[in-house]
Length: 146
Image 1 (cartoon, rainbow, N blue to C red):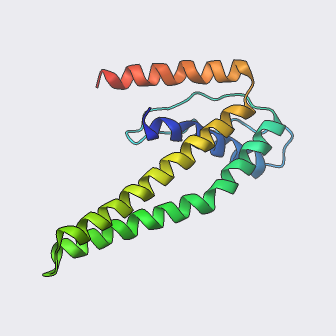
Image 2 (image 1 turned 90 degrees about the vertical axis):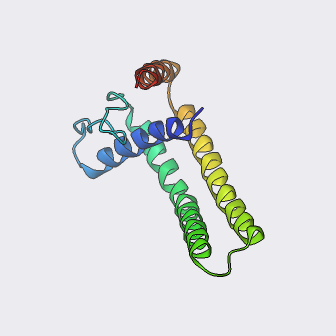
Image 3 (image 1 turned 120 degrees about the vertical axis):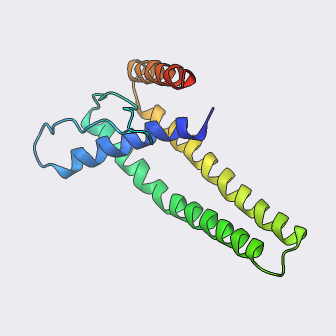
């Protein structure tokens, strides 16, 4: 399963939770569906209860510090690799060490996203999970044709 596939439900959850908290009305209008990197709609609006929205909001915000740390670790590893490649002090051992650090940061981020997706799915009803699975399958089928 691709990491990007894991990210879309989390993005949907963050969008829905943020929209519900941003409005003080009892029934907020549905947020627009998240857009993928090429502007494709990833999911249609999923109706969530207020309790589900609150839980997803809490899950997303609890995950943000770790996400930020992974982003920084990846960026620093990329920068260090670039600097090493551009320097007169390039060694295979140092490059391998930096590449391993980058790989560990990417792997940690993927693990956190998988964990977050599992937590997200645990908030959904069986019907909502089935609907999400169907949309994900349709999305994968669309992109397998590209």
